[in-house]
View 1 (cartoon, rainbow, N blue to C red):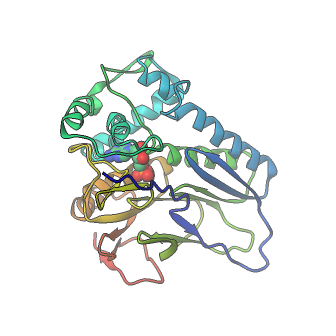
View 2: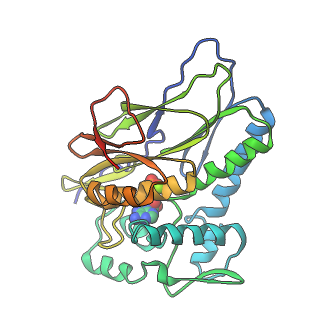
Length: 326
Ligand code: AMP
Ligand code: MG
């Protein structure tokens, strides 16, 4: 078997910053949550440092690969409370709503495929079957003390943590008097407020077959979360087959749903992040039904054939696409 590369593309959504005469934002780049995070803030250095500190704090709290993090301790059999328990509970709610397409208990599978580290591999079916026994939110216990896990169950908040972090940052930007901000956290973009020149935010959706280029442009106003899940963001190849990091909790294998990426646009970063992962697993047809039932977000889908579909509340530019009617 040939093991090749695992690529982590930090900017799934490309930021199309332009605008003449716009006053310069304070900005910072940091490495956390296994990717490069970039933060631009207009109207407040205090907000910039509050946001940076928050991103580092949440990374230390929620990183499943760190035995000392709260998720590390939870996975080692301890009970954890507070914010971590609340986020695990939220993740379990989204799992429920998406019929298990999003599932925070996928960590035994993620480890088996090696997506936690540098070395990826195709597991045997018997290893997958064994790991699948610990997958499912029925392995999570919630009590007054907090959250704990049954047996070999383990939590991975990688599919929701960056969205949650973006949402927390919005609260800090408000508290610290920022007028506008643009956060790029891996595949997650969070806009906040209005730039000094009053221009709308223009965000590019990465082309899954050439992620440094954009395949479509989205225009949004004010504060929004735009989260992309894509098979191209992390993957490896073995024996000519590409295996990506978004797993179908039913099979334990990379979801083969006919989608190359899903971008969810919503007010809540946490929800957008959970749903982008879930919709990728569901595939276009199930995802469309789910969107019709939910009414709380918009989405842009890119299929593995390169076709673009957009729900009727969003208008992608610089591309041809099919509208999904309500
Ligand atoms: P995202 O980029 O938000 O779609 O999240 C993908 C990450 O979430 C993966 O790297 C895994 O850590 C984790 N993950 C993979 N599959 C799932 C799933 N079906 N539900 C929840 N988390 C998942
Ligand atoms: Mg996600």
